[in-house]
Every structure is written in structure tokens, then in C-alpha cells.
Length: 253
Image 1 (cartoon, rainbow, N blue to C red):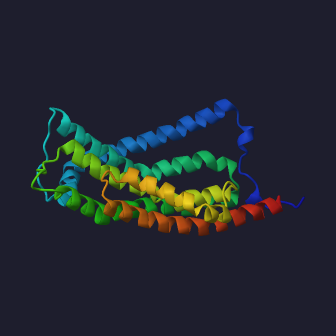
Image 2 (cartoon, rainbow, N blue to C red; image 1 turned 60 degrees about the vertical axis):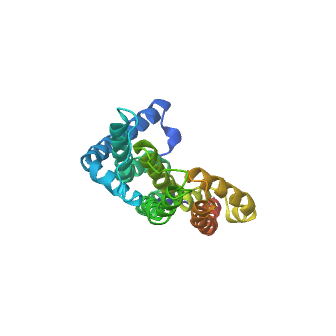
Image 3 (cartoon, one colour; image 1 turned 135 degrees about the vertical axis):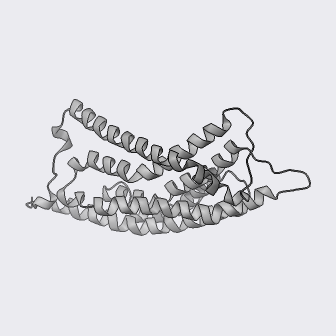
């Protein structure tokens, strides 16, 4: 067996930790992540009214109905919580990385400088795509659908929930290339596997697009599917790269 350089030696084997040590480490990381979420939510709480007004722009800035006494304040806190999660995401990802890093080699730990910026960046790109492309198309279609029959007077919980769902879930779905690369890096998937299963992937992406877009109109669904299909092709390329590095490490071992 070849000698392994210091860069390829695990910094701390997970197997050397007891179950209680694992649980304690998990508790610490979850505590810091929860703290970041609380801080992010408090900051968002201060700006929640401005965020609500910003989210109303696709609806023409019109006021929203409230059908329950607590509906307005519930919507207000929902906006603050989702915004707080977005603000806290870099810290949450860092805590996740710190939890798994003891089982990684020194060289692999350096991926944190790529992993966190790439994950946050793709999440924000997904949000921007949803806001500038999907939301205007969906709101325009739904608010003008059969106007002689349906009068558009949306409630706060339904409209804001609709917008937040599209922004949040499309942002998460843009993590696909990063997730695929990580799975390929540990040998769970590879490029040929993803390439050969493209038909299954198209069906899965169609289902995911239907779940992300509360609207059932085909235009919004196709606009959602298009970037996800492009990301799947990108994921195949990253799977080749990630699995190639996995095979290289196996040869060294």
C-alpha cells in the first residue's frame, strides 16, 4: 500500500468518537445554527414591513385581504422567518461543514472555501430567477385568468405563501449540481449513471417543477423546468469530475 500524504490523512476519524461525543458535537452545531437563525429572524423582523411591500410589487402594490384576525401578523412573522433563514444560511452551512469535517482529509477540508460560497450563490441565483422570471409570469397569468368570472382579491396568507414558496423551493432546487458533485465525490453516483437515467430525470424534474409552482399553467411549469434541465446537464459534468477524484483517492489507498 502506498504511503498517504498528510493532506490525505483524515484530521480526526469519526470512528474514534463515541456516540455521546457525536451527539454532543451535533448539539453544539445545531445550537450555533439555531442561534444564527434567531439572529437572522430578528434582523429580518426589523425590515419585514419593507420586505412585504417589496413582495407586493408583482401584484401591483395592491393591499391584500385578511380573513382571520391573526392572518396579518402570521404572514408578517412568516416573512421574517424565511428571510431570517436566508440570512443565516451561510452560518448554517458552515456548522454543517464543521460537523462533518473531522472525518475529512486536510485536503478535502479546503473545499469549504468553494462549498459554502457556491451553495449560497446557487441559492441566491435560484431566488433571483424565480423573482424576475417565474413570479411575474405566474402572477400575471393567475390575476388575469377569466376576469369576467373571477375577481382577483387575494388574501395575505395565500399570496405571500405563494411567493415565498416559489422563491424558497426554487432556490433550494438550484443546489442540484453541488449535491450531485458531493455524492459523486464519495462514490455514490457517477456521470454515466446520470447520463443513462436522463429520462427518469426529466420526469423527476417535471414533478419537482409542478411541486414548486403552485400554478398549474404550462408556461410557468416550463419556465421552471428549463433551468432545472440545464442544471441537470451541468450536474452530469460535475459527476464525472467528482467520481474521477473519488477513483483517484481509491487508487492511492
